[in-house]
Image (cartoon, rainbow, N blue to C red):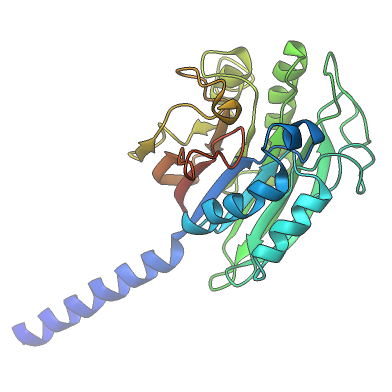
Length: 291
């Protein structure tokens, strides 16, 4: 009888651990400002054609299941789509809501995730229409997507953005708007916010995102670098200026998560290729577990 009960207990514990593993799904997510393809970079030997394979190698080697880009023009998106045949992407150009200007696209591995719905809103007083907000120099967008895991139908949301580099008021109000929109769109579901925020950790926009809109801290996000017991790897700098503007502490690209996402690892990938920089930003990657 003792042997029989012991075997039953072992089977129960195994089943319980299996169910828990099935209910907690992991993914690797990356944010990467790839630098738009511009003629000025061609003259400085940093043309997109000379960098695109390096960018793809960084993403592939670090096994990003989902990656969000900033400053991506449609031609660059097409190049990367060709490098990742099992991935699809969502997003629109910020200039016209179609193909004009820079995108903040989200790429995802179609063998692992199902796209449920997606949309884009503008960081402005009129987010549902093509517009420029507050004191921003350019139109800025947030592209978001709801996904299901292929094997569990477990849902989660990803939001990808690029804050303005000039408008201080725009950055603060963009942070406030994003929190409102995340709550409206994703509710209490697992959510990840990624992007180039053109702001550092001690800045008002960062404080808004990580402290919420009111003193009661009813809704806020956690910086994946310090969330949970995650392990950080690599640099604490993300903007590098193609190696010409590396300043200690200049981390302006972030991954944020809500309390339904556990961070296992976090890193800034600062490798170069024989001295060549794939972009003027380093990508940020996190391995996370969705509850």
